[in-house]
Image (cartoon, rainbow, N blue to C red; front, side, top):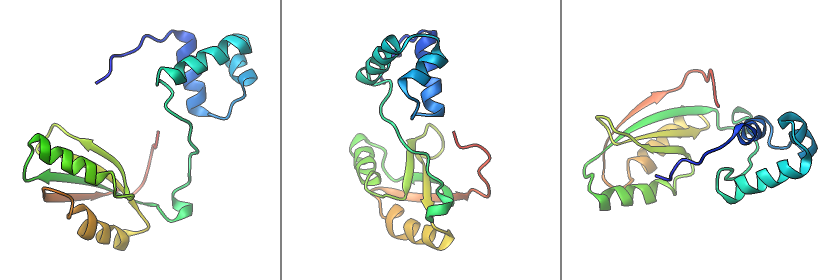
Length: 151
């Protein structure tokens, strides 16, 4: 875990504004923060350099590109020693349908967010890819019926 960085009000305002719209010009961002363009641009560069801003991304309508089916998968491993966890982590990174992978402190070991076209595609991914990941002993699937908030 990395150490938390102190951010002042202006930094937090910049992050919130860019979180809502990463395409803001420096002039628009400066107006929102209440500073001139030069100090705002310097703050943005510092936030990027320090790894606070890790990148910029487009928000994609996944339904429209055939990735509207969301399943959450609880994964229990047969072995939770470091080498087994490392092997699972490395292999999970190679499955493009796994959008998120979190190690969990619970009665199971990982929670995956998986995106596919539909339930049939999900079933194939589960059977052929997720179940074949190293040390997978058991999975439980929860299908999202509706996304209420995604941010």
